[in-house]
Image (cartoon, rainbow, N blue to C red; front, top):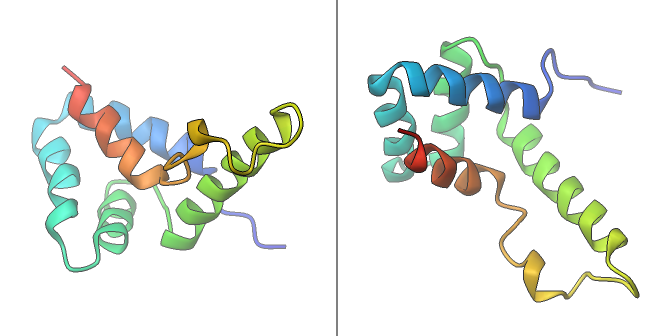
Length: 101
């Protein structure tokens, strides 16, 4: 089974710390929203800065997290409103990044 060099949470945590220390990196990451292929552009920029991510790794991580949360909700939670949108790891990361000071 394929194992990334760095786990998605490790890469995102490191990338967030790097962006906090480097306003230009933070701006570049946030600007990926405007790219033709936002997630691909984001992952390329992350990799260029030492945090290897692939779009599929990010998508899969988000789906796994939501599946784990859904299983933990009593009686099954696949349709629970609190899970809506929570699988979008990329967008959630950018929201956290916007809130960094």
